[in-house]
Length: 407
Image (cartoon, rainbow, N blue to C red; front, side, top):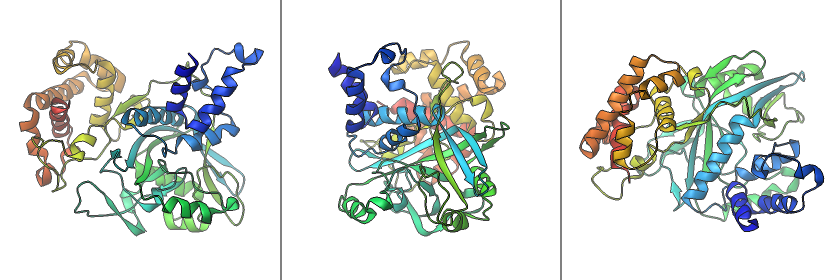
């Protein structure tokens, strides 16, 4: 039993943290014995922010299953156990709940997601990374970004970085740690793209990565990202520094809260928004092994709560997340039978807050894609697939076709 518990903890937490938790669990106090909750569901306190920082570091995670388990834990924590806090110079705070976000992760030879930005700024975990302008990459397995320009206009975005080691503390000799990190040539970087937040005080929802950044800029009194990072934050991009000092006029940090499990909305997982197979280097679905873009496009790396509130962006992706939660992920013939369930479109419509006719149309498009399979997917490969994600009908047919060829 102890060994089973140890393995379970190590999937959720890095070895050092797991050992600490296991040790305390092996020698319970009288008060601990009265607790109903398992160690894995413990409520984070301020001290446990160190555990969160460790969770974001995937340096010692080696298998696809371990990666999946860690991502599930991080998603649960971000949606239920923390809030974003924007602190201003006048000592007033603005708190936000995270309602929707997406994972992007590159681990060399283990998890090479071609849709991950791959910016050098994503090499350390626990930082705020504002999206840089994209550059075309001839390598369809990689994305490239500018090293100078932030994305502007309606294309802005902000990640909480994860995957690599934590950003070294300046007080602990960042130079030595940085040198050690750079000596490791393994690709290890990623980001959690924040898509929707809700202001705690008034319930105002901000949906969309660019509008979310606009909200942060507005509350910080900054006219743009460069001014925010360089002037307001004095280049301190840590997501764990809640102190305004050394000339900073605002900061954005993660704050642990006590989750209300009974009042929690279910967490859904869906494919990410805005991705397609239009890169000219994407190969045919008849070529095996499948191209990484085909394999990673359907990954359910978008996680969210309250689908009925996410009405501005990603309706077809939200549909797929709710659909997956309602049907068993069994064999192909079992899935096809589940997709024909009479009450399915009604149940999806209820969860999403949409008309049943819309849900039924979405189901029809997805089933049509599954029926077309690899032959149908060919129409979305390369330049022909540009813009497929902008139409619910074409997107769901594409995703249905991918689901039919996955093993």
